[in-house]
Image 1 (cartoon, rainbow, N blue to C red):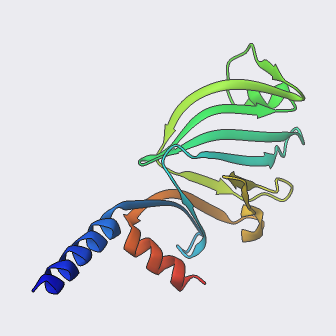
Image 2: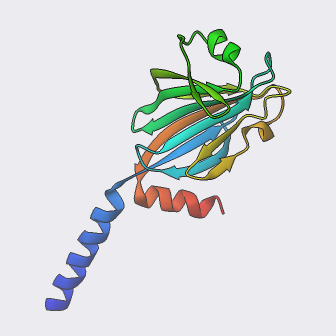
Length: 160
């Protein structure tokens, strides 16, 4: 009887652990196909980096992943013109080679059109996700998804 009670307690603990939410970024193509999945925690810094196609200037949009999507915290570029073009208010601060502007937009998801010259990519916890590999003209969606740890583990296993 004691053994059955121990097994029941262990099973209950495993079920409780499996129910703890797990978060990840899901990047999908226009047809809804899953291109990349990156595990994250809410509060993880996410950088959308690219070369601005008009001013040919490296640009980064610095975001924070939240359970509900993203918060855009800052935009920086090697060209002040990029910040002005994006409607960000001057004066801009300097950070080495970068001109930077604060932002505070809440975004439920990111939609990125892959351009000819942009080489758009995400930087998430030191990992680079090459969005540009989706192909020129492609539109990709970046979303924060919540799932139980059990579902996330099965998804990770299926994507191997």
